Length: 408
Image 1: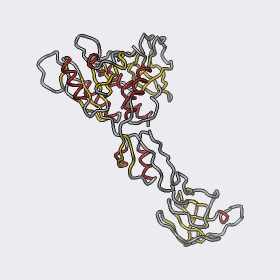
Image 2: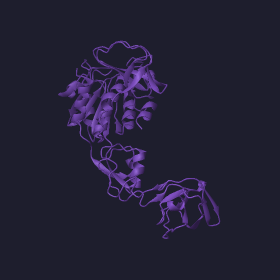
Image 3: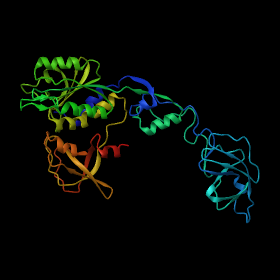
Image 4: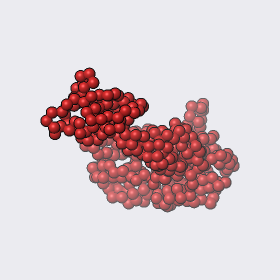
């Protein structure tokens, strides 16, 4: 067995990003930026007003003077319209949010602090020179590159790209991932079954959903019987037009496990983690293969730890693997063993701190309790027993509400 960190490093070092393509802004959402776009304009393009009010010369409203005469309003500046007139001493111009500051003005006073009688405007209160003016290129300037390559694009990034006047972005393609679930005991969910020993395959749909959430394109193939011939034929099919193959089951070295012979030689077999020990990384016809255990909880936990970073690397993301967050244990934790253990846990918030409490059933086939979980409590090898309230590292689960909250 090799440590989790070493397994993860071998996978991510071996993988290279997939091809890139130019797509529309809407299609780019959730994808990883391949080339930093260049701003085609200043933002804002000119000095503009941040409020509805009046554009004035600050010296005309400097209330160090005992009595201030009214200002004469000589026009207005709506957003998107340029008024070529300039204001002179004693004059102002009605202006709206986004309106271009007229020549001669250096301050905007908000309408709530004014009184209008015809074209005579009286200012009430104080004003700081330059207030409520957004300066030209305050946000970014022509030629700037505020979005870096390797970044997974959010709605915020798409809005920024649009403001930069970029209708398209060059992004990495979504990784194509073939999924193989192996096992004589499996059948597709919802199919007629007469034999009580046949169980619905949870791993295939679970992995497909995980890969989709992580930004890949899943291709779920037929269930693979436990024979050498069937396993090899399935791998032949899975590696066609795939950037990665992910398997579940058949990765141990029992009499009915054939992946270790079909994938020999391997980059590694066996990881010092619980659940997930019989995990493997290899190549088949030059296509990388990540082989995961057969128990459904083991599959999804191992996918969280090993598969998610692999998908990020294929998708071109240059962010380092997520560092564990810190929570407080919601119950006492037993001492660790010879493998790094990932305890499924729910999260609650008390006084602004996350509290991670292990779910009742930690069995590697207990999907109902896994579905309740929000995060994994990481228990290192030979970790000491911990009392309730002790700080512990956690890894938020993909798709959980806490993952979405923390990672957006």
